[in-house]
Amino acid sequence: MDILLIGGLWLAGPVWDDVASALRAFGHRPVPLTLPGQGDGSASATLDDQLEAVLAAVDAAPEKPLVVGHSAACTLAWLAADRRPERLAGVALVGGFPSADGETYADFFELVDGVMPFPGWGPFEGPDSADLDAEARRMFEAAAVPVPAGVAKGVVRLADVRRFDVPVLLVCPEYTPAQAREWIDAGDVPELAQAKHVEYADIPSGHWPMVTQPDELARLLAAAAAGA
Image (tube, rainbow, N blue to C red; front, side, top):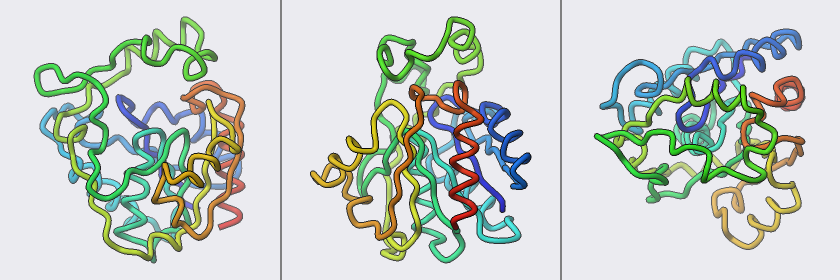
């Protein structure tokens, strides 16, 4: 099965290299995506541009793919479910939750000269980054791509209720499946509260399991693909 891999903020396709290698060993076809504005040198990209790149990869897949979104890009994976509900085998959401219709995509940190640079490790101290050693942090910082304002401040638009029929795997790194269920049941994640098929998977990592636990993340994604 084609497994489309969408990294979160500041991340380009190569962040998935180790996961992709493990997925190929499981017999799948990983497709790490480098999104417009996050690896192609364009600071003028918009959220719509990134969504179009994801949809192009969906449409190019020879069969229904599993679409994997990490962190903020969980919303991009969910937007793909909204635009192509009949074309997806499922979505896997790693370390994040989809935004609701009308919300801003990822307006989390200060913009500088039209982009949102990586803010440093301060906002991520604690469970998010506890499993990243000094070398991993250095490599992350060196590879981090500032996010264009048109992406960060893009407005999420969801319209097709068939998205709620798409199977969802929620991969929980720095929080537990029990915590995720509590947030969903409390109404904090309205999109997943309406999803009809949600499964949960725990992974012993911080916020970036593709860096610190690539084999285990690949195993979970391969199992989701097999189930789909």
